[in-house]
Image 1 (cartoon, one colour):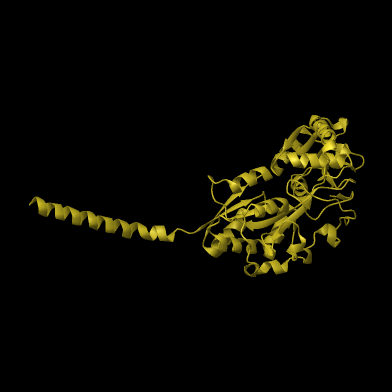
Image 2 (cartoon, one colour):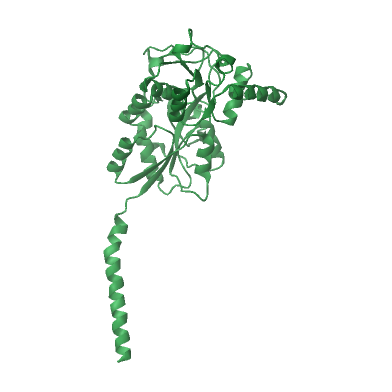
Length: 348
């Protein structure tokens, strides 16, 4: 009897196991794939993400960063989540390519790249995004980094970076929190090449950077942070790391501000989409990049964030009220070399 009871128990357990599998297997099979995106503020708004999720029956997780350092750490962290696609500047892209952190793109699977302006359809002419004939990133958006200033405090727009060091505005100046960015800014202020600082000049540049720090109210990382600091503390002038994106955000908030590219020129950045070499969703990541280049998505980036897209000329270049830049200044910033910006002109 004991033996028969054991057989009955074994059959019962087996039946329960089969029932369990039958019940929960469909749930496991129905779980949609997840695309993990590492991005900057304003690049992937919830409604646009929802449309992509609906179209491809997937789930998208957006992680937003506020500095190159954080982006670099998150993308390369072996203990952290694996990101499938990343928005990064061309300098970071070049470093990631050298470190084999990115996959070459299958451009035939990104047909919307053919919609881009001619200068963005030549990846070999954009430093950092190609290697040995393969393309590793697709341009998405760009901006110069000018000065945002309180119109009520300036009878004339500040036409020089020197406004950031002006003792009249001590405690009422904001700057972006970035080490290499700060050295490049100080070098330009001193009339030096921003990216080729001679060893004999580093001491002077460092002292100039300390002088800037003493004139600041604070550093910032995110555009929302800069807006809050500007509004709460009566800031006079700010180095706008996010450029036109910050200008639009400030104006939408009702602040009486102007924007100028100083006579020394400006740092600038060009952000691109790329795919991590650790991605398990490379095909889906490719679809994401193609989606980001759809006209309605790119236009929403410009309409909502004030940033240029790569499909249409920005107003300042297309006769929409700004002045066409006329002196190039090699550009690198919180995000790397871009369409460099230039001699002083006002916007807004």
